[in-house]
Amino acid sequence: MASHGIRDKVAIIGMGCTNFGEHWDKSTDDMLIESSDAALKNAGINLDDVDAFWLGTMGSGLSGLTLSRPLKIQHKPVTHVENYCATGSTPTSPCT
Amino acid sequence: MGYCPHMTGIVAYGSYIPYWRLQRGVITKSLGAGGGKGERAVASFDEDTTSMGVEAGRIAMRNASSSWIPNSLWFATTDPAYLDKTNANTIHAALSLPASSGAFDAIGSVRSGVAAMMGAGNGNAMAVLSDIRTGLPGGADESAGGDAAVAFCFGTDGVIAEVIGGAAATAEFTDRWRQPGEPASKQWEERFGEHAYAPLVDNAFSDALKGANLAPGDISHAIFSGLHGRAVKAAVKACGVSGESVVDDLSATIGNPGIAQWGVMLADVLDRAEPGQTIAVVVLADGVNVWLLRTTDAITKYRARQSAALTVRGQIAAGRNDLTYTQFLTWRGFLHREPPRRPEPDRPAGPPSLRAQAWKYGLYGSRDESGFVYLPPARVSMKSGSIDQMEMVRMADIQATIATYTVDRLAYSMSPPVVAAVIDFDGGGRFQCELTDVDPAAVKIGDRVEMTFRRLYTVDGIHNYFWKAKPVRA
Image (cartoon, rainbow over all chains, first blue to last red):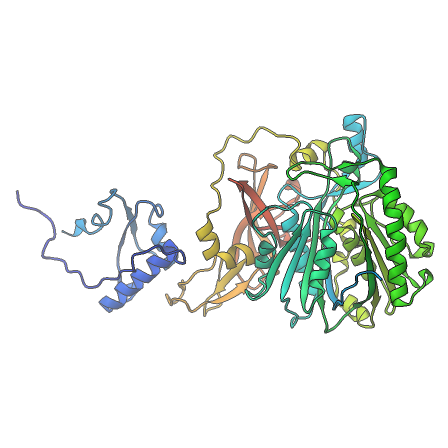
């Protein structure tokens, strides 16, 4: 059965990732800020250029507020996605 | 010759008398026994010796010169919030003292307060004495006790009272004792304690006077303090100071705040002493400690800067005395009440408490380039999107105005109802917080509030300290 997705019509243009470790000195907010800032710089765009956000987390907060609060996102849709261990890939699967 | 270490002088001080009073007659009416005349000060359900120590410390530091920074903080109480964990650290954090300052507890005995003063009288340092005193319902300790805190800043610059002498006398005897964890102390027959203290008073007082070349008549303000009422009274007589020099122990209005009693009395004296006056402090606590101090010319200018509302008598006058006996018993843990039908709060977690230390203890917000103030502090600017371009601002000593509020009778609280308010700080910053020391029926939009350091609740033995707002009463 053919997929009716948007595969090959979308590109990953930037990526940001924190170190993996026991970050006693970094909160959820701090890691979101760090990785988002790295991704935006990697893509060469600003936060304002982004039209919509999907945040995947299972244990670190509910709703899109978990992302919009620390990043101070204004007037854009932010969706919280959760799928146990598949949480990480779920935000990107709508794009395939 | 008694023991009197060389000490730096007092450069600033602050007293804290909690808002609530219990009329002793209310005890008598409820139990048909105990109680008496007058009132005693009562720490609120959300206060403990640490939080009261913070309040006294804040007032002291507000009165100290901005260039005065303590190299250590010494905290003394007979009712510590923690064992093992240093209570002074919480005060250190709430006063935003530098990391290079030490913070030390001297806890457990009433005489620990003397140790704290000696420890602090070394260079630039601060001593904080704080106590919550009560006893079994209907007993003398319950009605005679009081809750209060006091802080003294020591240094060499701008001394308002210098230490000119002192002495000590020590003897081992069973006067008053309490096992850790017990809610009340026990006392041997009072006449025994009076007998044991008498020679110690004589020795320490005469040693101190001899060492400073003074006579009892040279003393303008004589402070006699201790938990053994009869022994203290006898000491007043025996020392031969003039009747008018004897300082009111304030027991009629606030009771006896144990470790903090002589400190509160000393603060009261400094609130009104003239320059060049000699003060004697005589503390009866498992021995006797005597200090001799003399006020300097700097005290007049110091007092002119001080707010009248924050003096000992100013705070005594601003108290509220319609506390019920059942509320008092509940707050002090003698009445285990049915909790509200709400989930218990989570215990405060270690890692976030450390990461957010500036916010949680120092009430620091952040201000971005546009001047907008974020509470809690943020890293990203809402206006420009810039990251880590913030200036940290300590909000604890800034007043605010109530923008709106609600009275919640269902929310979890040890003393419902919860009054929650949204407050706007002078100079910017909007914050939602709990109001305390407040009459829910009297809260209005537009009321002025100031921040106060409190203990919100305790879960799994961990105290959750944070800030609330209370009405400005000055």
